[in-house]
Image (cartoon, rainbow, N blue to C red):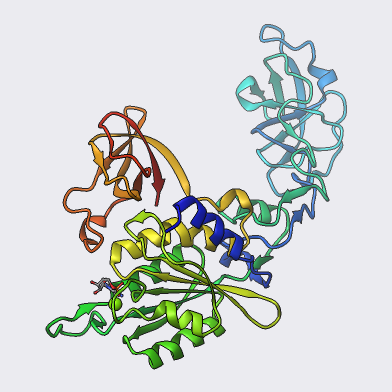
Length: 411
Ligand code: AMP
Ligand code: MG
């Protein structure tokens, strides 16, 4: 049995990032990971343009203008957004201009509409002393052609998508999503549409793990239920190892008579690197590495069958593996850790690093963790609903008292 931190290190050392890249339309790129660094294809903004509705003027004309002694200019053109100005502003002239419109040649300053007064039809009084060059967004002020915009490994969230669109990208190269095979082992398992016969239970892990993989940016390949039968299990496991980028199986990794996963991994040539981890729930975790042709290796996770153990294993160990596999930079591999004040006593037996599920909330400006009510047994998935965090009690600790800070893994 190895400590959690050592298991995490071993797992990360086994995973190789995928190198396959695909082009996707920007409209389909949300959440994807940029495969190549991107530089701006344009100056942004693309033109000197007005940041206000107002008047484009020559600063030298209005530098001595004051509210008491406003200077009057003749309006020679109206420039809405999207139009090319037709005239160069001369001394004594102004152009009516709107936000985003191109600043006309000859003008170097915008005066806000609120600081002007229109007189007759074609004249405007400047009722303040403007600041030179004010309210002009200069061409290339935010990014120049060739400036680096986004590094490889960047996750494409709404802001990154906006940057790419604004600087001329409609298609983008991203890493292919990891294909993750999911199989559930156990003679007792059936699909949710079936009526349960004595002793049967629904294979909820298949669905939970597929949802986890999707959220983690992977493509779940659902390989279904495999009975506790050596030959059948060997066939499905070897197909998964051959075809996927990562394999997750649940069940069959404890010490029961029908727990075959570890033996089969060894028979299939797997290098078994983890057999048990000092974590609760989820001790019987098996991790093996397989060499495939073209020098690639793939990692197999044999997760415990108990539904909570399986999910805790995913959140604690599979998530970092998927982050690395998917092409995220090292700084994004770790799960999100937060410090919170626990609102109840948290207890553990001290023999393993213990994960208790509950709710993390910001209350009166402080992070607070409250335990889910009911049993924290690894078979009870019911009170996992609506939890968003796991509080961690380190090994050799029996209690974290209410009011004390606890380390929490956000899920
Ligand atoms: P095992 O690790 O195979 O000994 O299974 C441990 C416990 O988890 C048993 O009570 C199983 O019935 C249950 N279990 C195993 N696989 C699944 C699954 N796919 N979905 C829900 N429960 C499962
Ligand atoms: Mg089983």
